[in-house]
Structures are given as structure tokens and as C-alpha cells.
Image 1: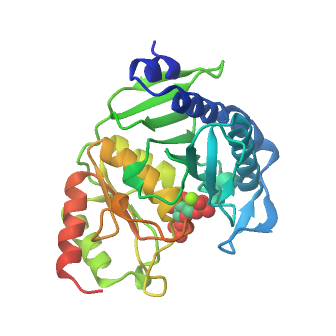
Image 2 (image 1 turned 120 degrees about the vertical axis):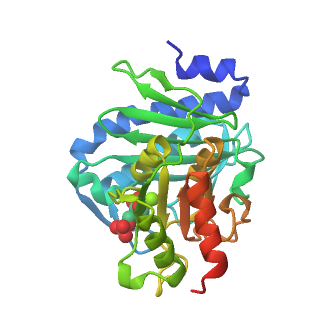
Length: 301
Ligand code: AHM
Ligand code: MG
């Protein structure tokens, strides 16, 4: 059976990028083991004033340490770090954007959570998503899976009991599908978002939403439909972040035949002003994103 290493070699992945992807993928084992001893909140807040779960900081430190020690990474920007980190001694020029533990409010409920990573070349995290060399997420569910693109389609691997990633599904294509999930309380939705949800519900869409973006997106990747975290009346930029959540997952969605938008713009074409900036997110199958854009084009907020 094809391993992650076999796949990366056969796909002609450059050596440094292969090393970095395998290094990050190896962190899933220790991260998974740490859940049982890191169930609580850490008592600290991140840059957004959000309570950090013990696993947020543990996974963050683990991946930062691995990236720094590898000598492969020049810059790293994490949802959990106020400043962009620079590793001056790096011998290679990769730059990482990451949400080390997405969905962490669900850790105590044992629903699936994950680690989201985007990898750029040429040493800077301040780039539009379309420049990504690779994007991946590790999902800690009944299996530990790695969903990966190096710009050559999307592959899903599963980690076996020896820590080896084996190819579970090659060249994943996102079906059109009818599932949807949306964040934000209904009274806080804007007019275009309300119209969109009512439209797809009339067409038979069915709700599925856990509150773990990476897990909710993975379901959309497999079954089709849309994940939304919209602009809200008192929060016009929504909740999720462009660089840590939108961009890597959007890159994977596009590579699987889906798309990502904030309602009007393809989020992979947005030049970031600030690594921590937030954005409304609609990510899913091609037809769903067409409907979003059509409704946002004719409905005023
Ligand atoms: P996190 O990165 O701190 O976990 O926050 C992001 C999470 C997403 O995983 C999820 O989709 C969203 O917040 C859920 O928010 P809400 O509880 O408002 O639905
Ligand atoms: Mg997150």
C-alpha cells in the first residue's frame, strides 16, 4: 500500500517540502497522546482574547519546536502566537501558517478536532493563498487522517498503529452534495446569508455542524455541500481567520474541485494585511459557491 513517503516521491515533491510535510505529519502521534492529559483550559488567552485550551498551547509549542529545529522554516505564523516567528538560522525558505488545534472548544466532548497547516515557499507568511506550495490538515477522529495537497489534487492518508501514513483515498473529488453547516446565531445573520441558507434549505439542504471547522469541512469534502462562517451584524468579518483557517482549507477545496469565497472574493486571491485578519468563509462544492456568489451579488447586507 502507498505510504505518504511513497506518494510524495512519486509525485515529484521537492526534497525540502517532503521532509517538512513528513515532519509535521509525525507530530500527530504525540499530539494525539497528549489529549488525555491536556483536557482543561490553560488559564491563558490568545491574541483574540479567547481562552486557550491546554491542547492549543501544547500542540502550538510542539509544532513550533519541530519547525524551528528542522532548519527548513524561515517564518511561522500561528493562530496562538501574537507575532510572526522568524527562525534566523534556517537553511531553507519555507514559511508556515497554522491553526495548531482547530475546534479546541470540543476537546472535552471527544468530537473530532484537527491541526491545519499551510506551507509557502520564499520565506514569508504574508502571501496570498494561491501561492501555497502545500496545504494539509490532520484530523484526530476515530482514525488519525492527513488530508494533503501539494497542488496535484487531494490525497487522504490514515496513520497506522506504527505511525506510518497509508493512502486511504487518492485524488479526492468533492461531490456537489446537500450538507451545510453555518456558524453564528440566526438573529445576527446578514440579509444575504439568511437568503442563502433559506434558498438551499428550500432546495433540500440538510444541516450538519459540530463547531469544529476542520471536521465539518472534512465531511463536506467527502459528501459535498458547504461550510459557512458568515459575517455577522456586529461582527462584519465573521470569526474565522484568513491565513490559518480559510487559506489552507480553501486550497484543499479547490484542488478537490470545490471553491472558497467570502461571498464576493475568492479567498485564495486576497493579499493579507495582517496574518491574524478574520474573514467570512464559505467553502464547499462548486455549485454551492456559485449560489453564494449569485445571492451576494444581488442582496444587500
Ligand atoms: P478555534 O480555532 O479556537 O477552535 O475556533 C474556531 C472554531 C471553528 O473550529 C468552528 O467552526 C467555530 O470556531 C465554531 O464557532 P461557533 O461556536 O461560534 O459555532
Ligand atoms: Mg480554528
